[in-house]
Length: 160
Ligand code: MG
Image 1 (cartoon, rainbow, N blue to C red):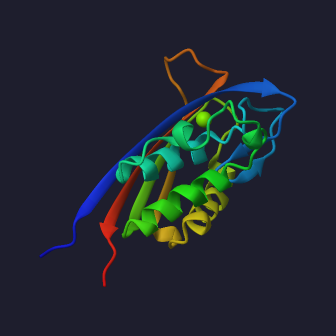
Image 2 (image 1 turned 60 degrees about the vertical axis):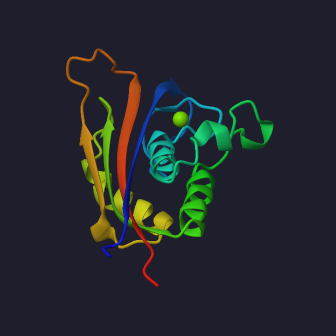
């Protein structure tokens, strides 16, 4: 019988605020403003986390890491992704590929594309060839101070 597949999708948005480091995909990006949030505000990792959890029907990032919990103030969002990945693996799944779109006006992410891909691949312990990170500007949305991320992840039953 062919291996069972599962798909997961994640979406998140955060507002830019001055005087905070910009964390995206687990790396720091040079920019005068960063993303607001109870944690480090890493909108891309939050969407990755939700896609992982969604694929196995395990709730969402807020149900695992409530923004009212002081333990997660300023938290490195890679902690959330590691937790979600652990649940995915423990449930018997492996990641086939991840496709992400980051939507923001500035900064341009082109110069960071390779590092973003490497960072996500390393965090998920998969080859960079299984990771795609695309960047778009929010044309017509009127949201220049907002960063959004959308992520789709495909899982396959772990082979014995
Ligand atoms: Mg978030």
